[in-house]
Amino acid sequence: MASFRITPPTDYLLHRDVCSYGYFVLAPNVWVPGQVAGDTGTFCRIFDLGGIAVRAEVTQPCLPAQPGKPCRPATPRAHRGMPLRITPARPICGLARAQLRAALTRMLRLDESAETIAHFHKLDPRWRRRGQGRLLRSPTLFEDIIKTVTSCNVAWSSTKRMNTRLCEVYGIGGAFPQPATLAAARPAHMRASCGVGYRDVRIVELAKRFAKDDVLKDTLEDATLSDAHLREVLIELPGIGPYAASNILQLLGRYGQLPLDTEAVRHGRTVLGLRGNSRTVMKRVGRHFAKFKDQQFRSYWFEMWTGYEALRGPAHKRGWGG
DNA sequence: GGTAGACCTGGACGC
DNA sequence: GCGTCCAGGTCTACC
Image (cartoon, rainbow, N blue to C red; front, side):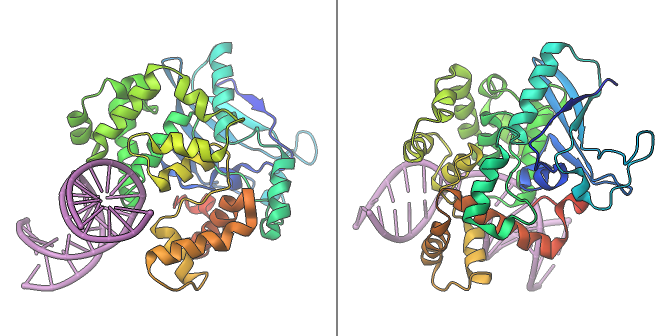
């Protein structure tokens, strides 16, 4: 099938930057770890391109040392900054290709320049050597918000199940459902078929807000508005509380607030050695990371992610996903 | 402003 | 196999 290329920022590394956030294992996203030397893994997803489901694969081959010879990279770093190869499973027109390119640009945060990452590394040099900085997100803000809602007050295994079923039941060809589709869903049917529990009404109401017009989306993606203002807008939405609002802010590329949940408390106690009840530990975690200013979420997240990988092995090799 | 309890599901545990 | 308990963030009622 005809593939095309996307040139990422010079520091981009697919397996590192896709497997950097739990959404890489939430449907319809799939990560296939590399099977042989030189294959760092493949990111797969079914995209809804104007109402047509298209499965696409993304890889980041390294350049062969000599033309005509196979690639034999010494380390996965040999892939850094190399063009991404996008392979749709079926022929697509120019418009669909543009949609796919835009979707991947948002998901992989290719619009975050190397300079932006360098700003983070200046505030927190611990992540400079491995080059960590980008976190996977969804092709649309709507999907990011629904995924956040499905991650609240539930075990991760249930979050995975909810997203899988939402795609199976309401998505075109297994893609993530559109706002209009979820807005038209009956909450009771969604609850019974997708296991979303009491989140049913909240998901439908959120979908109605996004399906109605683009004002909400445009407001939330307005770079001129302050974090505090966007936080107020988010918390007004059904199913969005303090934790979800902060998480959605980071998904919008605003890293100045921490989504403090029970994981933050666990991290505060076990890694940072903080003491006190949950409320106290949360406040102390917040104070601990305040020194990283507008990048504190990234510092917090990579610290936690490093802990997960220490326990379970590299995410891109195992595909455990949080 | 702070707090308690309900919401729902799946997993762990005891029997 | 069944019943019970618990974890998880948001929302509402109440003080």
